[in-house]
Structures are given as structure tokens and as C-alpha cells.
Amino acid sequence: MTKSRAPHDTTPRINAIAADLRSRIDAGEFPPGSKLPSTRFLVEHYGISGQAIARVVALLKAEGVVVGKQGAGVFVREWKPLVYRPQQEFKRLPPNVDIFTKMLSAEGRAGSQKIDITTAVPDEAIRSRLQLPEGEEVAVRFRTRSIEGEIYNLNDSYVPLALVEGSDWMSPADVARGTNQVLADLGRELVKALDEIYVRPPRAAEVERLKLQAGTWVIEHIVTTFDRDETPVQVTVNILAADRHVIVFERDKYPMPGEATDS
Image (cartoon, rainbow, N blue to C red; front, side, top):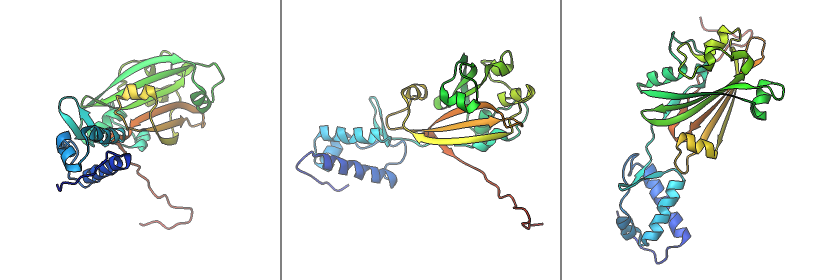
């Protein structure tokens, strides 16, 4: 590294140093998981004070580029995304295999989920999607999903309480055949879904549940599922830590009426 100096610890200078470190990280000079040079080294290299370097590091932390580990230093954030496939909702699974288990097994990773069950009067966003009368209660299945000890995403499902009360859907344990199959067994098979995807800063409760680091945004995937009568049955709100997922869609081209197909 060539040594350079500047006379003042100005904000433009701090932004320029942050941009330089960011570009070097992007170029692979400091790969994911590697430790950044010490504050003393950066002070000497860039010719600014330790206080200014602290501001540079704080800026990179706020952007989610680096993370601090107490007593160890500052490290480039690692990228170990889970492949998230929304279309798996309707794929037929083997008996006793749920969707989360299927996602993990495809990548050879181990995970777990914490499940909490409650009942509540839903907010307007959920009530309107389920087309429920005001005041009607829903059952809620909160899932906090972890991989190798790190929380990756939240999966919260809402259904009319009158539909699932007393069924396995209300079990606080993993349901081996899957909760979608429970709904099918209750006569409300899910056959159609409306997907909404939003990318946004996290809310305070999401920061707490996901243990998010500064600068991490979330992907909100809201799935409203319908039965064969096109009546909404379930709303599932998935909150994905943006630095821990890659979303993959598989799409097929279906022939239009009269269009020739390959034999």
C-alpha cells in the first residue's frame, strides 16, 4: 500500500477514505471474513487521526460492509446466503418433510425453528387480505428460523381462528406433514398465491427478532394463499435478512393457444 496524507480530517476526506476501502473490499483485496488493517496502520496510510478513522469505520458499519468483533477488530461481512425459492410453496414434498427442511437439505445445511402460537384480532393489513369482518380473530403461527446458530428469517402465518382451532395447525411444534397439508385436510387446500415483495429498512421488532447488525435491510415477502373457490385462507409474512438470502424464481414458458410446441 502506498502511503498518502491529507492535512485535515474533513467529512469529504472521510467519505473518500470510506469509498476507497469499500472499492478495495469489492475488488477482493479484503475478502469476506477477513480483518481490516489496524487503526494505527490506517492512520499512517491515510494521514488522518484515529478519531477520523473511527468515523470511517462507523460509516462502513452503518452500510453493512464491515462488522466489529469486540476485542478482535473489524472484519468484512461474510456472505452465506440461503437460497430462498418462493415457488416451493406448492411443490409436493415427501411425507414428514416441511418446506424449511427442504430448503436446508438442498444446500446441505442444518437449521432449526422456534415456533410460537397465539390468537389475536389482526391489524388492517392482515384483515383486508383475509377479507375478514372487523373484530374476527385469527390464529398466528410465529416462526423464527435459524441456520447453524444464526437467525436467518421470520415466517409468520395468519389464518381465521374458526378454521384451525383445535387442529394441528395450532401445535407449537413442527408439524411433520406441514401446515399447508393441515389446511387441505380441513377442506381448504391452497391452490393459488399472490406474492408481494418489498425491500425496506427493518422495524424495531424485526431488528430484535432477527438480531440484525447496523445497515442491514430486510426483504418482506407477503404471501396470500387461496383455496379452489378463490377465497383467501392464509397470509404468511416472511421477513428475510437481506444479507442472508438470495431469492430464486423458476419460470416456465407455457404455450399460447395455437402456438406450436416441440415434439
